[in-house]
Length: 338
Image (cartoon, rainbow, N blue to C red; front, side, top):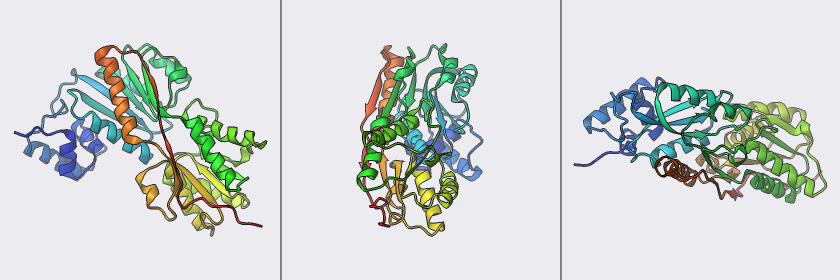
């Protein structure tokens, strides 16, 4: 008799692993028709899986997965990969999607009060003074996509790319192409997160050439297609001499490309655009998006294994840097000559 995993159910239902997890955890944010289809397939195949079965008592041990950013396709893909790698574990995963402006640590406290949580993975977190509220949690946690080494938490590991060096590389590529007026779209540039490190690396490359970044060329925005479109419309209407954009999310970059088209500008002839993350859609935009590609499966695999090592073996926290790749495609060119 075949033993089905959550990944098998997702494949048969033609939905993501994340969607199946939402159904199993009785999340309200699932389309009714999709929920019915998934539940029917679960019943037809006598799926019990990794304690995700319906009717599981809330007193069972669980692992929390908190994703900070509902509209970020990269984080959604990463969360799905984490659930896929963890599909064979004898543990129930509770997934919580929160807004990127929400407090993931307060969410973690709520989850631990409502459930018997034995471990936690934070996806897309912002490590700042708020993290102090979970210092008292006596469970291992893993921060995914952000280096938590500086936080010096005795029970926290992390997996991330070297954001500072990749931000530097993006600036060097644009400077080498001849660009000098470059806009940057990201989150709070002084926050202690991976995105702030990207900006710091970007500024490092400018400083190496005796240049400085004009704060007026930075726009803080949410990481969504809509936010990228809105921010680019507003910025480029007032700054027609800017020849390049570094968007710290592919979703923002893709939205910005649409906005530039709406403004009558061509990419890369008028404005070069570089994204970050390497989502699948970046290979199919017109033009194809130059981006920094993060290794989703490797990040997910290492995150799950780090958590297991701490939970099952009492391993000490580790902070792992994985390699990102600069994917040079069609959205970057030398600026037009005046």
